[in-house]
Length: 269
Image 1 (tube, rainbow, N blue to C red):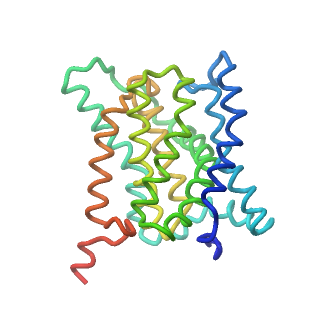
Image 2 (cartoon, rainbow, N blue to C red):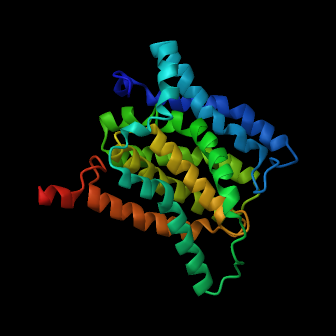
């Protein structure tokens, strides 16, 4: 269950502590000559993903003690909050669908993209790997910072603020990954749209942290494994436009105030 005092948490303290904890990882990533030993390309600085969790747990311990930390970890598996199981469809399949659309667009426009190369039997293992990585990020971005922002602003405003800071925080690992400036810009813009979708899913699943983590894992699985070849042909510019259209549809249908007030359900009622 969400902590009663979560709305009073200081997101500013979280952001400052997060960036302070991230600096050593960014410096180490800049000095490292090799990437992480994974099939897909990730710089060593990507290990910074543990910092949102670390920042959140430090602040939660100061505010609520060890019980608060136990509560944060228990929320990582609060799938019982997802009362309507139909939400597993966007959680698990929205991002693969968007990546399939991106692949189709690239094929139809004559871009040199090869056939996907992955084995279905390996997907569960990759999903678990990305779920663990999602825990490192979403305990902070969703479990700690989202509700305080939503208490003071609309859900759309909160998600855009989080998305911008999330994108800035990712920018250094993107640079260390030797990506082109246009690629980095597109990926940062896509990150803002993704954060809107994460908050949308979170608010519609009883504020389930598990749902946010699982969707985060689905995003990484789609970009880094399902897309050819281990994400090497992934184009964030196309992804941004697809995500922007999806996020716009979400805002129109569920409303910017909460991202959880489905307009047709209200009309029917």
